[in-house]
Amino acid sequence: MKKRMKQIAACLLVVLMTVISAPEYKTSLKVSAAQNFKIHFIDVGCADGALLQYGEGSSAKYAMIDTGAGKYHVTKDKTYAKKNAPAYEYLKKMGVKHLEFVILTHPHQDHIGGLVKILKDKTITINTIYGNSLEVTYLRSSDNVKKQTSETAKWTKFDSDTYKSVKNEIEKRNNEEDESLHVKYVTPKAGSKIYLGQAQITFYGPLENDYKYGRQVNLNIRQENKYSIVTRIVYGKNSFLMTGDAQRETIEKIIKKGYNLQAQVLKEPHHGYQDVKESDKLISGRTSDHKLLIDRTKANIAIVSNGYKNIGNVPMKNVLTDLSKMDVYETSNRGTIVITSDGSRLYVKTQKGGNKPSVNGRIVTSGKTVSTPVLQSVDIIRNKKYKMVPVYVGTKDAKSVYSNKTITVKINASARSFTKINSVQYKLVKNGQSSARIPYRYGRSVTLKNGNAAKIYIKYNTMLGEKEVKLPQIVVDTKAPTKLKLKKKKSGKKIKVTFSANYGTSGKKKTQYKIVPRGKSAKKYKWKTANSVRYDAKKYRKAKLYVRFIDKAGNSKTKKMTM
Image (cartoon, rainbow, N blue to C red):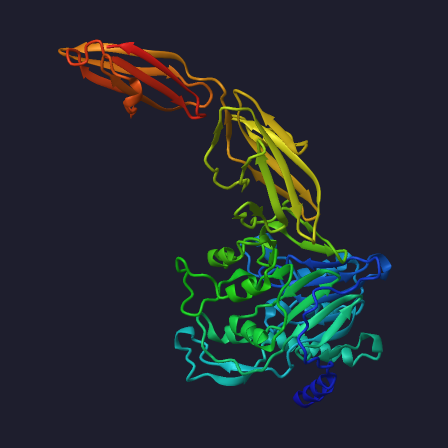
């Protein structure tokens, strides 16, 4: 059997792809056909399984990058844990009968296990499987995590039960009399390209197998992750980076080779684990081991394939910190995520959650501009003068804005090149009202008059779904304080005067006073802030007491009395 496996492996590995030595820096490809390209990020649990689709209907072409595990992977939910081969079931649901190719990023079971059932189904044919060598070796130390050291690590053939099963199923297919069931296995060359329709896929690996043994957690497993084959997909003006479980060393090698890592959509490596070098603990202020990749990618959208109620509680906080400039979609609460490209713009559709991101990328302010991951600029101006900075719904409110004049808010924005704004809506939610009960209305301008104390919610309807933001509470109070009162109370030789007033909608900001002796000019005396004043009646006899009442909108009124 071993001899036969070696023969078939040697035969299969003869097929190699053309090497392209020059780095690829083109940002777009011309797309002539009116076809859509889609990536279905299948909810396979805390694992990876993506279906690529070019075109629609009977003429559609399909391929895969990873196939998930044999079961819904590592979930705390008993119902989900019973789901067998979710990637295979998704192919059946989609009616896929032929795969142009399958890319296996690395040989871990949560990336290749689902391929076993696909290979067993003879109604599904596959032209080519791309992956690491079937005889791949890695540095391995003790199975006891606490005893793993670089000194005891040895080069060892990777031969897990799942990998054996995949190789056995490939062998069975190639022994079938029906040649349509045969499948080629190819180890690609870094820099080479393949196509699905007019979507171009460039391989950034496998790279040289000379990684050092020196990671935390389970060092053996981390070694295999380093072999992840990163691929960059370009369709028209749109780009995607598929990363498997790539580690920092993998990315460093790709950068050294001069390959282009920029993409609009990033498949976050390793399901959102942080993969720090020094320890497996979350350390305050430390970013994840994927920060180098995240910064190089400059993506606007991140996909985290982490699965419903995953045992690892990923993505980790430090990973989300590094992804904070992107809109993050997680399969844990969005289910299967489908991103569609028409060669120019992108569309997002989620199984759950109404196409909204799991985590909104942060709003970035720089001088006069405000931007979000999908909006190039957000222009919200009040009274043609003051720029207002929004926050995402669900985040902490900014300080309220007060005005003693009617406020008109103008709402504008421009979208990134890969999407567009279809419409803008707003709603005015007054103090004490539930925002959920107030419907949106279409418009780009809203006016708040005297007596209004409300928040403005704004919804930008884009091709990538809704971007919902809110402005700080705006309070408009055009009237000065009323019912001014100066109340005297004598206590021995002292008199105490307390100040009170009705401050209207905006509320009280402060009261100020000054005592002006008889015959003196009030202009020469400074205001003091207090809610009352105590004075000697004999000392300030016939002096004037001036009290100024100021509300938060800036309105003021002064009352005076003879002391």
